[in-house]
Length: 170
Image 1 (cartoon, rainbow, N blue to C red):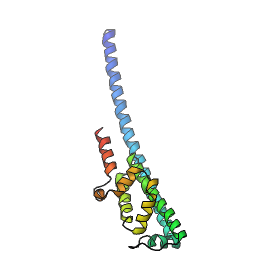
Image 2 (tube, one colour):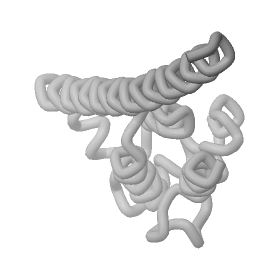
Image 3 (spheres, one colour):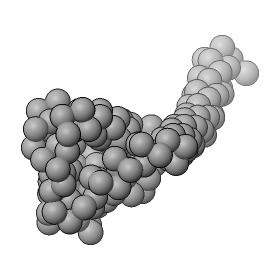
Image 4 (spheres, rainbow, N blue to C red):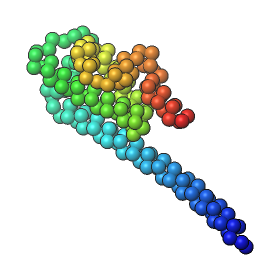
């Protein structure tokens, strides 16, 4: 065997090794991404459960939350309204975080959908609508659009689904 033939065999073996390495890295990246999504989704669920526990363990907060879900706008004292705004901002902040994590591919889309649906359901109550209209400017524009997208109520996360489609096709 001459040196040229030996070099050609070496190049073929090297090319096979590169392809095998790339396939292995792709598999590892996919596995790592799944682990990140699972961990992020778990952290989100724990965060929402802790908020529920905090509400359940604090009668004043529970009463305030229930008051915010009256079919007509309840009378809030100034301090109550401030407390409600902080509570609502905390809840909406968690939902927006889930939304943004989903857009980045670090959160389960279905989990973010559940939270968006919850947010939309809260906006049926006058106190929540009043809070939302006062505080909308502090939230990310795509999040606000998806929360307010009435046509998307049952079909999902408009920009998240579009983003996922672009990622899958690209």
